[in-house]
Amino acid sequence: MIDWQSDIIIYLHRDPVDFRKAINGLSVIVQEQMALSLFECALFVFCNKQRNQVKVLYWDSTGFALWQKRLEKSRFKWPKTRKETTFQLTHEQWLWLLRGVDINKIKLHKTLSYTAIN
Image 1 (spheres, rainbow, N blue to C red):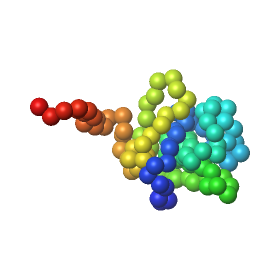
Image 2: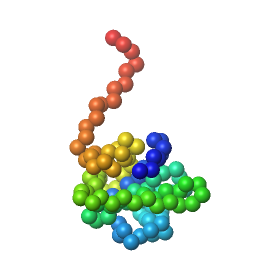
Image 3: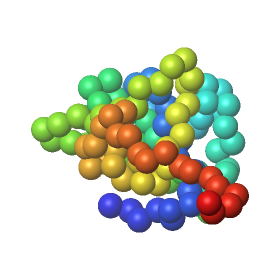
């Protein structure tokens, strides 16, 4: 697997896409449906209807690259979103998604913020 930087922004397209689409077709989705810039330091992630494949489109400062993964006996646990077309993941959530973890069911500790010690 490619080891992308941990500070990279990761955008998931909520709806399945036709996997006959390549760089040009997915670029149109990023610009028109997701309303994002193709040239930012980000990964744009898409899945097929069966949820057994993902494609990742990204700009590497010299051109566009397209990465694809196909599962042989399982499905990706795609995050459930409301009506948004785009869902943003942390690097940690992205790794979980690739490993088959259902990030909808994970509950992290609540972040606490204090200004003084009692």
